[in-house]
Length: 385
Image (tube, rainbow, N blue to C red; front, side, top):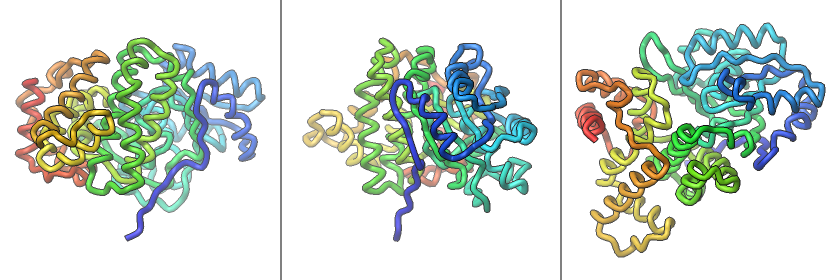
């Protein structure tokens, strides 16, 4: 059976990588930019760093900054209208996963108007036409939305996160500029870094993993463990740059092989309580890996060896305990010590959350089969941590 692997056409990395934006716009002969960002980045002056590049190159643009942290269907429909009105021919997305995910949905609807309801984009969309071109400049080191074929939109009416998978949405260019990421507050840097780690770990153990995805995920795990604390706590420039690359490398893998039930559970916390995605993943990752330890001991052993542990000699119990312990330690090192109860989760909601998690598109990729009762028990444990 053939393995399909999809990546960007072109990517840039490093401090001031954004300076390559005009040449890419001119190379593709784009005439006008629809610039997508969020108000927090605009107010913080981060978006201005990209606007200045466009102004100096005399490239016309229209700014759309009505993006929520967990973007909604309304964000997308409003964005489509604004994009149509702008008469732009390329989308430049500046921000975290929220801005880039919204841009992907806008991009697809612009060339596939039959999907304007947004709801029909959920799952494996199989849209007919390539989306409107996107150039993505991430400002967080976590989601890897700039290199994936996935995006997530919240359906507020149904209180679910729609996971959309579509090869037609991948940005044509990714510009991973560490200077744009350096402005992240500590809490956001920690959350997005743990999100990247979750991508790498779940991608490494998912049912569909292969030799190529293993290569990406294992390298990403090593880089994150080596650089996340310094990037978050010390604002170390080199560590920030390495985290930007590590989250991208993780994205190269998981976009092609899928994830698991950390994401199935985290999506529900985001949809119901508006829990930040990276925080939700960080809180659930050790718990779910302990649960998956029953079938993933050898994969965990490989990770520990790559991290420098003499795990070849560990018992299965020692492997799981050590690996889960390192996940907890790293979260604490970067200041994530909250529980799902701190974000509004309640015992009386657990069955509802479990039911939603059962229908999440990430569930089939988990290496251990998971029942509704398993989800109930996992959510209960997450409340009690």
